[in-house]
Length: 426
Image (cartoon, rainbow, N blue to C red; front, side):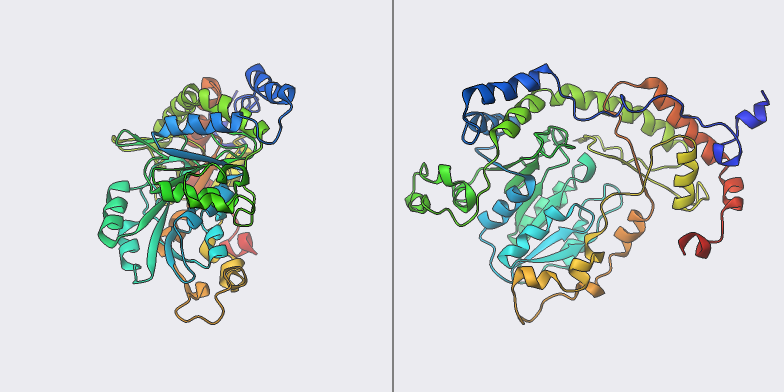
């Protein structure tokens, strides 16, 4: 074989680097006989609505995070709505939020009339930028939504200090961060109220589900009154008078989901270890080529809900779409981020959010069509999503590293073959 031709990337006529089957390496979630038996237990018991497994799941999460209260929900979105409700947000109250997140971190607050204020993401971890947050605080600011994006804890030292300084509450969306730790404290214990999603892609999935966590009795009471109609009667306060109605919605988790989620949480530590080992190894290979792989600083133990890296076009002179195409031809499963930036979405820019928030003609409301987050937008335009490799696969990781190395080495030649930018985007 011609050695020079073997070194070429596939886009220039070489052979693809990734030849191994990727389905087994990336199969998720991991469901075993233990999961099946847990579900069968609920089915055999016959109580498929209020089974004790729900309370058992809550006890598991309270112990996992060290929180006093845990309340299971039918999904993480409902858990976040309960968190916003528990804080007693009023119409017109402002909440500092990221734009680089899934919509459920933000939109549920609109049903209470609260107003999201989008803030920049800092480039090191893509969490909220404390400096930009400080600039956007007003007399109406009441709370902060912190998202540990992809499993990488945010800059909590600065964020917690800012919250104390301005008397703001922290809602911690830990949906990506099951098992992550910040200064030896678990994610899920870093906010006034914290929420995990148990959706099927998450690190400890239940199919659908969510868990709200807090230490404050009043927050737990309000979250319970919102939608857990069977739990309200147990409250030790006069709030149990609402047991006949709740506050109008129903958020209880299904026992079958709770049964799955308990098993998945038990196996979370060893499964996180596999992902971490795989992606630390691959990160080292990719960092040497000039990619930023969001490796955690020493005081953080990150997890990998998703594996995102940042492309530096000065180190590898290819536009992102050209890089993605070249890597796909190598056999890599790569893509741009799946979360669009929220502040750019028509729901906000076209003003449809007002229909949900029902704030009428109230003054001082934001015009989201004018919002610009240049740091976040630049960073998001250079992100590349790879598989999270939840199973041992050393040979496949080496093939991915080889694919990236070939494309990086031949980036100038690949760039010469690309059409002009206007032609690529038309």
